[in-house]
Structure formats: structure tokens, C-alpha cells
Amino acid sequence: MTVDVVVLDDVAFDVEEGALMGLVRLRPQGVRADEFRAVLDEARKVARPKAACGIAEVGHRGRGRVDIGGVSFTSRLLEENLRDANAAFPYIATCGAELEEWAAGQQGALRQFWAENIMLVALGCAVGYLEGYLKGILGVEGLSSMNPGALDDWPIEQQATLFGLLGDAARSVGCRLAPGMVMRPLKSVSGIYFVSHGGFTNCSLCPRRSCASRRAAFDAALYARYRGG
Image (cartoon, rainbow, N blue to C red; front, side, top):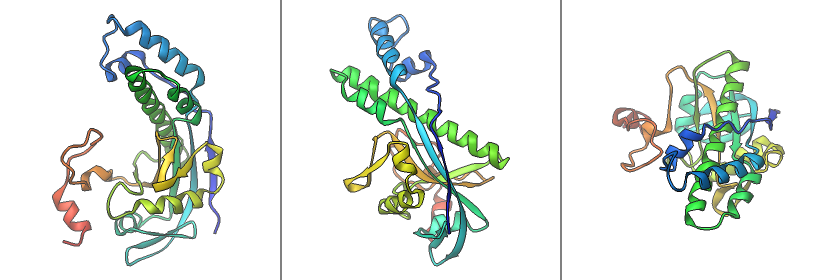
């Protein structure tokens, strides 16, 4: 079974300066504001966020496993989320190796902090562009995703399986897996999108109390359901 893959390498680094300054806790008229603007101007010149996505048939499902594009993934939750799906969309999105290389050259803790946040926003640009692309070709508004390692149910080791499913696309967008299944560039994300009108999010099944990235409250009842409790 083959997977049709598209590489999206024309993602705009579309950044609103004021919002980014707020993210790094700077005031527009503050003493460091002009220095930050100069750093951001440098980043704009090199940033090349990218994404890649496959369109894969969903095959056999059962006993906590699901086949996507002829490759087997082990996750009870993924199986449940794809129970009625005919297709799934494995993906990789990244801030881009160019921006990570630039960030590595920033001197001092403050500039490193700025660069980290600029890379995070660039990753957001890639994810937003990819989601818009998928919604456009599918004609839907409801998309959700799961990510290997985000929950215990889907182990991080299956990141390698996901990369294998996408073939050369990971290399095309400048992503690779380092030891420990760490993605490089670090500001990258991989996972599987699926049509979900109910709006599934990993966060609703994560009981960790302190998380700056939380996008939804922990749902104990839903957690018990997927754990078979």
C-alpha cells in the first residue's frame, strides 16, 4: 500500500511583531525593544518553516492496533479515533533547519530565549499552513491530531514508524530523528491528523497538572473510558 505525500515548502513566516514581543515579555517602547526588532529582522531573512503530509488509507483495526498506509501502529486511542475513518494524514512540521542554525549562533541567554520563541512561532506557522491545506483539500473544518509520545498509550518509539511511513519527505523538509526519538530541528512536531468533528485533543487525556502548553482541561471521565476503566 502506498502513501501519497506532499511537501509544503512555501510556508510564510508570518509574524505579528507586537504579539511576539508580548510572548517574550517585552514592551514596544522598552529598553530592549530595538535590539529585539533587530534579532527578529535577522530571523525573517533566514526562516523557512516547512511541512510534509501523507494521505494514507486506514486498514485493519483491532486489539489496540491500526494499520495506516499498510504500516501497523500500536495505540488503543489511535485505533478508537480512527474507528470510522477511511483515511488518515501522517505529517511532519518544522521551524526549519535554517532557523535552528541561526538560533544556535545567538549569543547570551536573553537572545537565546528570544530565538527559542521565534522558532516556536515559525513552527506554528508551518502547522497552521498545513492544517489550512488539509482543510481545503478535504472540505472540512474539524481536524484533530495525535502525536507519538504525547500520551502513554502511543509510545514515542513509534515516531520512527511514522517517519518511515512518510519516506523521503522528512529529509525533504530537513527533519531527522536523533537518539532518543528526538526530532531535529527541535522545534518540530510529527503526528497523524484525522477528521474529527468532536475536536479531540491530547491535552484532555493528560493528567499532568503543570504544563505551559496545555490547550484543554483534563477530562477524567474520558481518560477512564480510553483506559477501559
